[in-house]
Image (cartoon, rainbow, N blue to C red; front, side, top):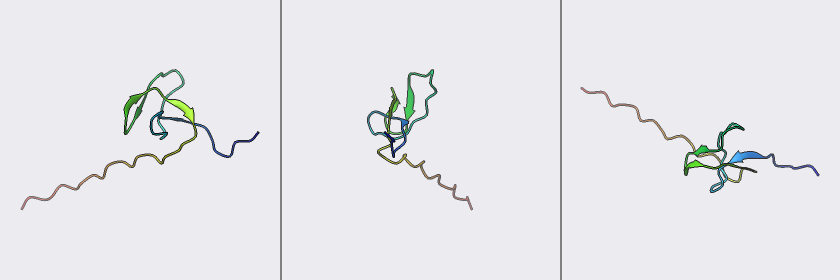
Length: 59
């Protein structure tokens, strides 16, 4: 059987992708902190990085 959706390492709570090496037992989720990752399809898009505000010049 062919899977049309690839399997990734995801957070078990929000199903967003996380980065974890095979020998690591934990990963960091942007929303939930340190989690034990699982293998699954990605159900939610990754959390976008926060916008960086430009410092206002002092006059």
